[in-house]
Structures are given as structure tokens and as C-alpha cells.
Image 1 (tube, one colour):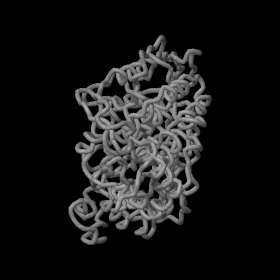
Image 2 (cartoon, helix red, strand yellow):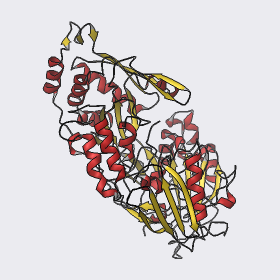
Image 3 (cartoon, one colour):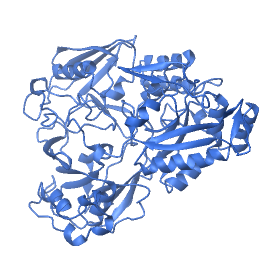
Image 4 (spheres, helix red, strand yellow):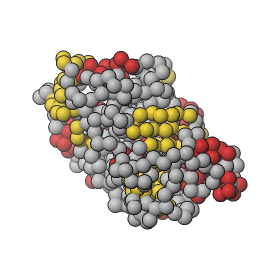
Length: 579
């Protein structure tokens, strides 16, 4: 339960995004297995179990040259790229949109499949399979007209029936990570028309449809995730589970042929990714703020702006006040310290977000004030300036008095709570510990506790938890704020805020909904903002960092959502080698 289930949305990508590319020294393409065989036979892959210093360039240079893939213009510049991603980026169920491919925790364009619509770099909508679409005045019926010239990679035509099959299957599949629960039914009255009826107005459906890949009804089965057939820009050439994925340009694709013919994605740990770049084995290697200074020769450090936010949920109700049921699970709810609004507001005004970015992220990030900073639906009223004096005054006025040990008390209750974070994540640990230090200066004791999510989930409604969120869709606000939202860990319930959220989703034109999203955050008197209910304290937005080989030009990036992975290659077909 990290990123929201809906896709991206928002502002222009940061100018930090791309570095200046230098002259490129061409790398030959390698065998399908040669690349990972090199990493395993060398020691970049073995860094999962050994230290970085144990790897040598001599072993890392054992790649076998097999073929040159020329660019589509006939030049001899290479048309293959090798990209590293986190092990968690590998889709556990394969390349199946019915489960999580494209629309799971780490939202991205599905590449192998086409979508009805997609988004520009400013996250405005544009057509993909659709040639036009409209919504009824009551917001309950969406009608799409689709292209009549699209075929799947097996040569069979794509029709509206395939679109309806995809949407209905996801809407009725309990294991689907794409949220299409608002869909009543999708129908195909003819081969080029799709009619989607909803059980409630929900214009943010468009953001989800922008990442839901359309699958062929005739070819879908239990093995689809391992052997996908699609109509997208690429086809699956090979998948070595736990190691790599190789994508190849789809010769039957209806759009412009990709600049990059083959995309090799290698899944590896962060230190192995660095070693692979240092050995010159990869073209793009993900990294983090803690390793960014170790920039390998021949690579630029590319900094992609994101809405990959880190924030802490703050339970708003007293302990034992209610229970939340999720399936067959029943959770205790409430916290007697954070249920005091003065505590939550003081935390929001007392935390120094700039210092967190500087100390924990080495400057590779930005202060976070909401789950959707920079998006057109984000309210400026969520942004607050660090004001320790105001924070202390709020606590004083609420009766939280400093004790002899420097921790405040009220009616015998210490201002103390446990803060959970995902163990093994150095950024979350660093943020949690630095946050705890800052809170101590306010007289609030924060006991930091790292654990697996399996161990964290029983505490998600009773204790503050440091989460990672962020998507390019306003539904992130809905999920975290609506009274019955599946991510409402604070258990904040407001009929007024719910009303704004319902109004936002009922707007026929998405652009007309933005003001309602903002009012749910703060309408001048109430909302979830720091000066209001303060249901969360947002800390930082994490920049996504990559080492990019000199001479490789990345196309302009959309703001990256939560997850350091596939979002980078949304437009890999538009990348190019310079020179």
C-alpha cells in the first residue's frame, strides 16, 4: 500500500531533468543472455551479496559482441539501450494489465499494450487508440471512438470488443491493482465504439485509462503475463525472471516506429546498478542521493523531478474509537496523542522540510507539503513556512506542558508516539530519524521503528507511518482523504470535505474539477491543510536520479510518480543516440 492506484497528473517536468550530453563512444550490442551473464559472471550482480570493492572492471568487460542493431534511419549508431531498475520494478505477475502491469503500485505506460488515451509531458490528455471521446451531462456515461487500423502483434485486429473485455475484466477482478470499481459495464455496440457506464460520476477514470493496456480477448489466458500479445510500441522478446526483460520494437505498431529498437531492462540492487555503470555495461543506471556523488566517468547524472512524496499519516481519532475492516482483517484505530489537532498542526509548522532535504537527500529533492505538489489540483494553502515559535505556541495553548525530561505532557499523557517506516529503506530511515530529532526540540517524543510492511500494517491506523505516495492523478487525494478512502489512515471524516471530493469527480470536464480538489484541502475555514485538520505531515519529494551514458538523449520526462522504475521509459521509443 504505497502509491495510489491511479496514474499520473500535473505540472511540467523540472528543468533539472536532463544534463548536457557529451560525445558518444558507441557501445556494441550484446547477446540476450550475454549482458546478465556478464553481470553474474563478473560481479555487479554478485554485489547483492558482496561488497562494491570486490568487483573489478576486468571481469565486467566480458560481454560478448553479437550484432549491431542499426538505427531506423539506416545509420550505424546503436539502437539498443540497457537500463537498470530496482528488483521491485519487475512485475510479479508479468505483463498483464489485469493484475498490475502499467497500473500497479508503480504507475507507467504499459509499452507492450496500447491505451485508449495517454498523457503529454504536462499531463494533459491525448488520444492513443481513441480518436475522440465524450461524457454525458450526468457524468455516468463515457463514449470512446477508436481507430480502425490497429492490429495486435499476432496480426489480429483490435476492436472495441477487446477494449470492453479489458475494462470489464479489470472492473470485476479482485486481484486488479487498477481501480475501476466505479465502472458498471463497458459495451462495444460496434467495432469502433466503446461505451463505459459508471455507477457514480468519476471523471478521474481518464487518468486510470491512460495506463490500462488493452489486451486481446482471443489471446488472453493464464499465461498471458509471461507471453503477452499487445498492440503497443514494443513486444516482449525475453523475460528471465529475477534478472532481465528484453523488449523489441513492434513491427506492426500503428504509430511512428521507435528510435530505440531494443530495450534491455536489468533488475538489480542499487550498489549493483552503480557497479554496472562504473564498468560501462549499461546505458542508464538508477541511483540514489546517497550514491549520486559516485558519478562514473562517461555518464551524466540526470535528475528527474517527481511527485514521489514521503509523508507521515497522523491518526485523527482517539484510540479504541472505531475499527476498520479490510476483507477479513480488522484493525484497531486511533492514537491518543495525534488525535489532538494541536499536536498535528504543531508538527506541520515545526518540521524543517528544507533541512530534511539538505541533510537526508543531499539536496536531491524538494520540500513536500501535500501528496500532489505542483499538480493543477494542489492547493497553495497546503504550503507552510517552518515556524517553531508558532508550533510551540499551539502546544502551549492546548495544554501540553514541558516536563522535566523535555517532553510535553497533558493530563498525565506524554506527547510520545511510535513512527513506523519500512526497514531497509535508507531514505525513509534517514527522514524518520531526522524528523524525530526535530520533534524532540518541540517537546514531542518520536520513537522510530523500522519493520517490514507485514509488521507495519497492523499499526497503520493506530500509529503514524512514514509512507511513500505520489501519482499523476488527483485520486491520490481522494484515496487518502475521503471518509471511506482505502488510504485514509488518519481516519479523518468530514462530510464537507467528502462533498468537495464528490463535486470534483462529478465535473464533466476534468479541468473544472481542480478548484473542488483544492477546496477539499482548504476552503478558507476547513480542510486537511496544516492550518486545518492536518491529517498528514508531508516531508519531501524525492528526485529520481540516473546515470546516463554520454551521448544518449532522453526525451522530455513526465513528472515521475512514486516508484523508481518504469516511468523513466514511458517514452523510450523517443530516446536517441546523438552523433
